[in-house]
Length: 463
Image (cartoon, rainbow, N blue to C red):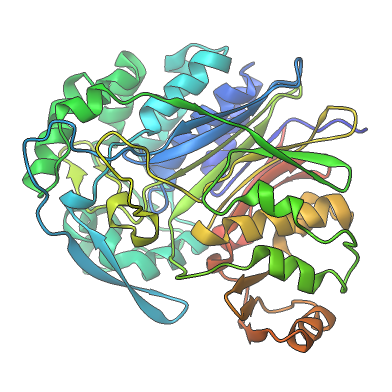
């Protein structure tokens, strides 16, 4: 089997370039992925940030071992010394329809991004930590240009993102940032420099921990010192399923992506597979926007590191003087389950994955944004690469369909024969006029190249 070329796929040119720069400096896939995610926390703050949470999947080429790390957000309240105040309701327009989200201090869960990136680096990094953080600190000093796809997301999410202190970076002078204008967060370089010097602990037990607690509580939240000091990165069990002779490996996510792959029809030829694939991918319930981003990296030794992170929509609670927006995960209705007690990890749709070939070598490293559409986006991309013989870029860019209850949402350009088969099987088909960020945002590195998703301004770069 052909080996996978070293490369980086991300949803912003600056993020992808950062990852490649670290690979060129002799860094491992983990070093490059951590550096790229930190760059996301500067360049892709519409989707993610230091104040968010996420998951990482690492493939060790030497041993063939796959490891999944959970550094998603945790429920605050371990200090048990206060009750949350009401959240702030905001209307966000998505797919032309208003959706109510909740932000504010009470929506802030315990962030995991600093701890998670620190753990990925501790386990699999080669370069010194300050060297891995340095590119993001440099980006934070200058700011970055906003891609057109990010500007579109900003227009949708402005009621949450430009709320309060968020108006300064996202709506300077009262006008939302447009494509190719400078996104700059005052003070973020100070935070990155402290992260480089003091390590992730600066946000959990160091000088920024007290600031975070004070800021969240002043905004009506419950985050306390015990919540931060007790936060730990967890190792998640690895699920796997067979697809076209390959093994797909990932964590067990809220949408059961790996389980779903195991239920795909045996005959995966087109257009006959459409009905079976739609049935396997059927989602029940509401479809939220979900601001998330993903970085996929493969190094010259064939190791892979895929990291997906999110802020939710962002709480609109910013750490003063540091340019950091905190997550709004407790305001995400579809993630609120009955077992959310203080200290418990929240659930997530995020599913960074690796695909291993028949010879036990890496075939694809991929992840996606898109909340409940993450599974759809990843499965369609894997079908494109592993079954249909497409290169990574074409597999990611082709039109997708997403099944919700009895309705198929189909992007412009979906195969008419597949849509006809779906209608004949009783599905209602809603045809969208374009490719849309609703349908996810895949980034992947595989035997057939590296690519980001055009729906999110994605970029793939080979070393």
